[in-house]
Amino acid sequence: MDTQHTPSASPASHARLPVALIGGGQIGRMHALRGATHPDVRFCGVADPSPATREWAAAHNLSWFADAASLLDATKPGAALVATPNALHRDAALACIARGVPVLVEKPIADTVEAGLDIVRAAARAGVPVLTGHHRRHNPIAREAQRLVQAGVLGRPVAASALATWLKPEPYFDAAWRREKGGGPVLINLIHDVDLLRFLLGDVVSVQAQASHAVRGFAVEDTAAAVMRFANGALATLLTTDTAAAPWNWDLAAGEAGHYPRQDIDAHHLMGTEGSLTLPRLEVWRYPGARGWHEPLSVSRAVPHTGDPYTEQLRHLRAVAEGREVPRCSGLDGLRTLQATLAVLESAKTGAPVALAPLEV
Ligand SMILES: NC(=O)c1ccc[n+]([C@@H]2O[C@H](COP(=O)([O-])OP(=O)(O)OC[C@H]3O[C@@H](n4cnc5c(N)ncnc54)[C@H](O)[C@@H]3O)[C@@H](O)[C@H]2O)c1
Image 1 (cartoon, protein in one colour):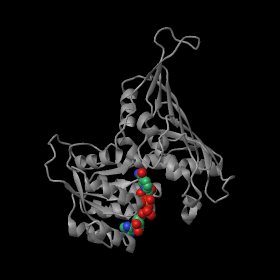
Image 2: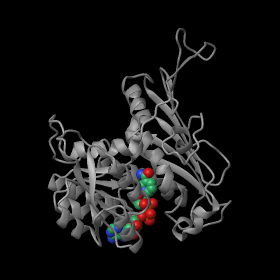
Image 3: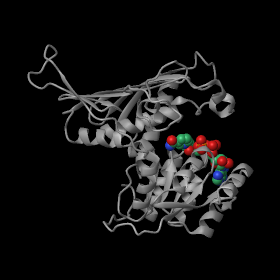
Image 4: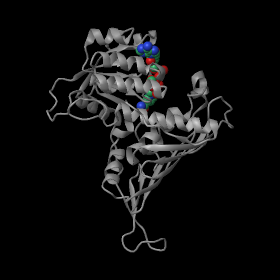
């Protein structure tokens, strides 16, 4: 935990916590729609300079403000959610922290490690909780996987693989920023897989990677492969491509959003000395008796888990704001995930391995 907030066990009161929304674009509106029927939170207003969001706010009976400071000062919310473009996360988060407002910042926590550090340090100084919107940590599949790993089902974690491979349709690239550096599958998508592996295996200490734009030919990568070493000694391979006719990715496998047709596949494999685990199907492979590659392995398979991680994330935001829970993905967690993900691009550019520097908060 990277704040001085002291958790307490007191239950939530009945009234829904007012949450300020900063940035009412695609994902901000999705959060607001979940908030409309949420038992624990309600959105009390949106700050977004765009006329389109102003119209959308009016249509949804949500108070509109041109900037974050006006929204925060007028509504005095119990928490805030930042869903602006990445480069604006720092300013929006700092505006919340300066007013003592606990804030959930969409992923990535910032566009650079330096900007992320500014947020985490300001939060630590002020004792205000900051959460990062790596929503997969709120999926029951990821939480059960973490429980299994922590219960020692894997024994000593040895290796992992993560696949984030799909075909993004051509119109996706109409927005120019998606063809430029920083707009590709590493920072937009693979960062979720980096965070999921960090959630399960702990901190990353070094990264080696290659990237390619051979198929789409944009400035940004369309394909990247990375090797990560974790502090516990485990190694992982992570592979992403947005230009292959392939189903192996969390979005299609985990059933989090109805607009992705769910496939009965796994996208992540974790291997340990005592057993192995797949996600999202949560298969556990172990030797029931004698061990060794000539011996039969048994597999147990869980009922497919379902549950909306975004709704759970809003419940958790309120619990953190009220001091009843510690952040499941703190600002510092989000920053370490960003640092490891940026190292993929750095290593791909230089061809050299990147050792992750300790972050001094
Ligand atoms: N966790 C997830 O599943 C997920 C999914 C998509 C996007 N995201 C993240 O959410 C953030 C927003 O992504 P998006 O796809 O909604 O982008 P978007 O472009 O659709 O929306 C961004 C909004 O921010 C507004 N904005 C710009 N400047 C602002 C300012 N100074 N103050 C307030 N609002 C401002 C824009 O007008 C726009 O409406 C990004 O950080 C992205 O990485 C997370």
